[in-house]
Length: 112
Length: 114
Image (cartoon, rainbow over all chains, first blue to last red):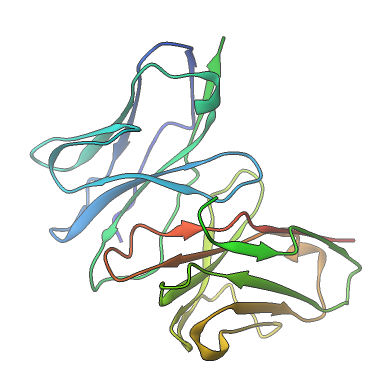
């Protein structure tokens, strides 16, 4: 399994754009990059998934360079409600390992 | 609300007692997972079902832990002879066949063993 490395914590202010970078140097050809968000006392919630280049949805954007050894989750104009732990995961979404492997995540604190 | 429910949300028990948790996944999802999460850590995989078959178990799942998914619908996780080290949040997740990486998590059951 490809190991991921991401910052332990980040601080931001309301209205700013937040970029969380994840390193996954040993990513395999069939691996996808997936991000989850977790609020206190709740289960993780799927945010976004991508394979290469850029993916955007209503919540976030995911930037993946050509070598795929890293990825950046971008949260536009964060609010207080974006304070959460963000997990970067790498894995085969098809027939590979079926369980998700979480690291310790990045704790994002958004200040007013 | 992801559509995955867990019961109870909180459980306090004394060491040595047995506890059972229930998970109701999204009805059309054939894959169901159990994870355990301790404070400050990400969830850790415990076990996985495809329909009613338990296909994978983590080494974290000691002999005191058993999980079932009769008829491929809801699932139960039982812990026998609980220990203080079992105190954690127990999370259930389900997914369909589109992408194993997009799992829908329930709110979890927080277990406290005194």
